[in-house]
Image (cartoon, rainbow, N blue to C red; front, side, top):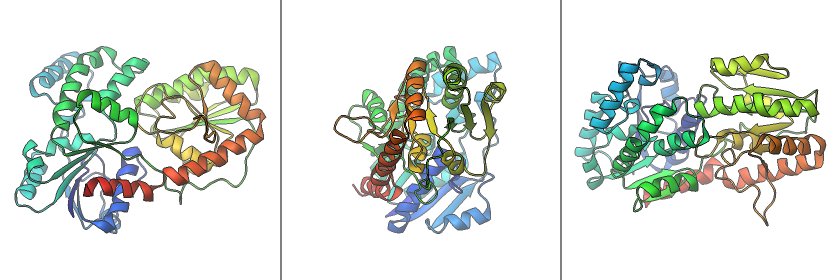
Length: 407
């Protein structure tokens, strides 16, 4: 098939900036040999000629366009401008966080390609790219939205978890986001999400939509299984430290959970590992036993040296790459319902793959069990790695994605 893949929000190589890049790149790498793919992306700093040429190992053509010369509205705190953005959202039906990225040049080019019959399918990698898909396209070609995560579900989840950065604004936006997601999803013949929880969010809005689950995976060649248990009493939490759900989790872990661990284990340490730590995260570095690393040369090496990986997310829907990577490396995981979403880790009759916790005391109990029981650590390490190899490898997930495209 001739596939037109829209990834304007992120250039997918190298897959090192975030979960969206990792997912888009690895799915392209898997379906590339099966189809003629044209990737459309903005001319971001990563879209260098060298990276474009590397990406052409898996895609036939890379078409880049200049970035829209607009500022991110989420960074402007002016109350008047915020009110104007809300009014704009009410009138247009599209969130300002989407419209500011819009490029008329891209829209015109994509429309011409579809109308001239140049492609058999148009794929949006991430829902934000939906703005380049006209509703009439679904009558001309197959239209697929790999949503990554529901924008309505994401905001609702943050509000329910008390992790919203601006609750008043998000409560006003929530019904508008539901209307927006319902409208834009109707443009697509196929929707792709990463977990049953994601699918439920969309089914509540669009009961008759064609929704498929293709999880996110791990590159087993780079996430090397550690050769030995380092022992000790070191905790680690990984993730981009400028993302709202990770900021909330890092602060919750460092301020409410870790001090209780520290009382029981005075030698315990906590590493908060991830790029772009905001001020609230940087401030955690002053707490006893806590280290905020910022970007590190190798996440895998940091994981391999840790006793337990903690994933205390209270918000954020979808499969969690941080959990998958920890399991792939062989670090025992203690995670919340959100952190373990989309994975069968503690189902009766199946091998135990992680310990679940949702309150500070539950985290302390689970962490204590792992600190004191090397056999339990080894069992979780082995069982989780086997699950990743069987269910969350990119080859098998690419096959599922290919089946959606061919259906």
